[in-house]
Image 1 (cartoon, rainbow, N blue to C red):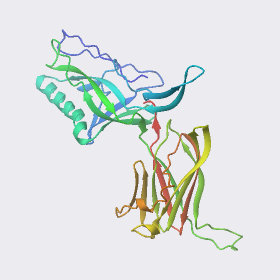
Image 2 (image 1 turned 30 degrees about the vertical axis):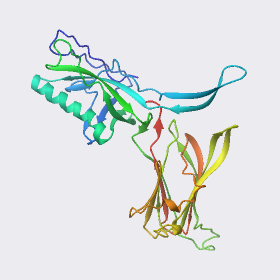
Image 3 (image 1 turned 180 degrees about the vertical axis):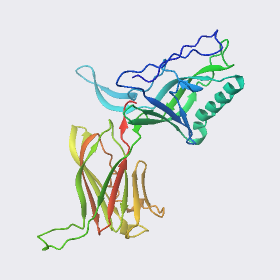
Image 4 (image 1 turned 180 degrees about the horizontal axis):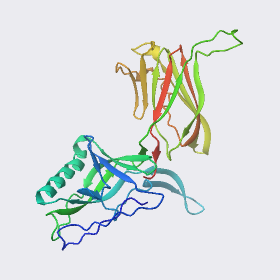
Length: 330
């Protein structure tokens, strides 16, 4: 995966030797940016800047690590019971330099703060954007490595750090959200201009096409009027006998909540990870779900038939589904 060209450091030289970037015909370059918890963006692939990542030694950008749980098989070997994705570790070498010692120290300290503040203020993001404009990112926490080489001539106007970044979610997330919108249209006269049926219940039976590598957990926003909300999906699920087809669904009865029925223009947001239901005025409505049978389902890769159904729907009632595809690699 061509990211950047590595810089060669000579310990006897007061400054780093920077080779010209290598362009791959018809491919171009991948642009990598670190976004710290404050939203400040730190470009990582600008060889003309005072800091940049070194390609040599980068690791952890491939498929997510997993732990396998197996059972001995009486005929020999083992059978896979479960595969558990593990947290990811990214090794990220960086070169930092300055026109003099003061400028170098200022940049070195600022970058150290940008990474270590993830331990106090929440994760930063490592973003990779391809030449075609598509991009993926992953949440990172600083784990260690901002030490410098400790060799002759380093720490004056340049130095190198080899960062270890810890990712609690091992999957890369698309920079662009996928969205689906369904809205109740105006009713029509049954006989004008020809026999017509308008449903006030079902906003749509459709097929979601999820382009990622692993399942995603969507967020739903429902706009009233509506008294009850039911979302269902037909999925392939794994059980003791292997893969089978099953329907997963949940219903939110608004009349059973402290809010009551959704009126025109009012909204309710249903999050599937973590499970949470909030009204537009921040009321907690989770008790309105049809527990214990409610399944706040995820969307697997590929095609999934789904149905959005609203009781009490009128013109203006709408459902908005959004999620970010997740991938194994950068």
